[in-house]
Figure 1 (spheres, helix red, strand yellow):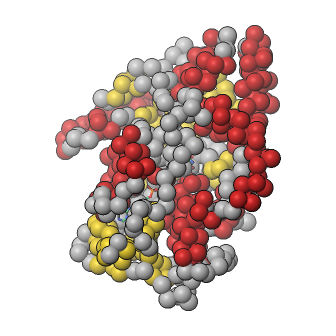
Figure 2 (cartoon, protein in one colour):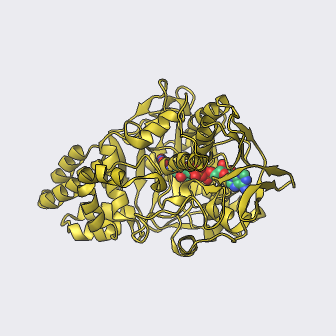
Figure 3 (cartoon, protein in one colour):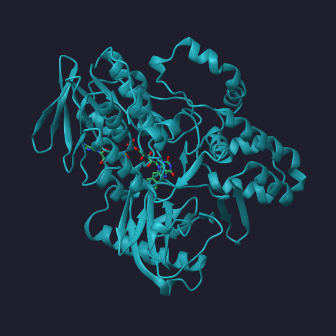
Length: 498
Ligand SMILES: Cc1cc2nc3c(=O)[nH]c(=O)nc-3n(C[C@H](O)[C@H](O)[C@H](O)COP(=O)(O)OP(=O)(O)OC[C@H]3O[C@@H](n4cnc5c(N)ncnc54)[C@H](O)[C@@H]3O)c2cc1C
């Protein structure tokens, strides 16, 4: 499909790049994605070891049942008639160091009942918190990018959004801990569980409230099969529309002439010329390396210097030759200051038991994944033998933790796989292993970065680095939005095709 006679080069075949590619091809641009890895998907990926699948991303996808994100998932083939969506009853199960259990239910009425049962002294406070979460259900993501919204678009949603604006006014500048403090729980059990989850992190209270609001509406489900087939469905759609992906090719530089993007140069020296360039690769590499820091707004400069990044993760995946069921898809152990390898666990660790998804392990077997945060500074300079030894130590320590969670399990372990922050950086180029970009903190929770850079024509950015908190929905949404902007520039109506 090349009816516009305009060529678009997209850097990066993660979910943002694939989304941009799909909408671009739909709208008649001759579209090519350049992806440095041998597969597409970026952070939204998984890998297979001895018939076990180890998923690196998907737990919840905002937009599985309705709204602007849902439209995007359908348009990009992430959700189709065959996809099976799983809505878990329990969001997560927490254990403290004495194995006291605390549950977070996906349904707010259910959670409220549970919380009142364990802390009747806090009934009013619990009801207030749950009311905030129910209100957040009114949040409706905009379908159009800010540049294309009319005053009428804002007026139309205003009555619906008033309660949300009130939430934003009250909580946007509070961290989770400040919010919990403000609520003033008396129950030690509730306080210690909620505080342990978020610790001293500068994690926005609004992000917490909205997250549970989405679960409550059954609009943040899990898609059976997980991340890899999700990305593959997008690839299929893109290729069906006539798009092309160049794999194992890394962009080094964006060609700019007279402040207009003209194409890209690959690390092997190949030049690819085009009418538009969209970067859906890591934000920092795009702005400071591929464009040599020549096109920076004050906002971008401030964000990249000051906004905190997500702390990277270590993922230890286990293939277990036995069926191990779990009450909850995520089990969080909040014990502080344990050590795995060289990392002291500031916020404990979690296990993801995938027994609810039969595609993740052969029949009669189970995939369990362990994750913990490990600061980038520990990994940055770790190389060679030291790196290999660290991975070995992690494997040994992680098995002990798994054994504590599931006594007797060690003898059934068939496969163990350790992925570190370095693994993520190597395969996706993500800055410092910050797998969702900027942390949604009190300073930036309601902020975003622009899809264009000052004075640079025919260039757009898409992906998780534009919205603090990252995640699949804003990545895919910005992919759509940049194409809407390109269509406007071409004075062409934006269309959707099958
Ligand atoms: C462990 C984990 C769990 C997560 N869980 C969830 C979840 O449950 N729900 C959710 O919504 N989100 C989740 N996320 C976040 C989500 O995966 C990311 O926010 C999203 O995938 C980012 O997409 P992206 O396309 O913007 O960037 P990326 O996925 O980082 O894609 C960038 C792409 O660009 C390529 N690239 C980079 N540089 C170059 C270059 N120079 N040349 C060519 N190609 C290049 C990379 O190889 C990559 O394919 C999770 C992430 C992780 C790691």
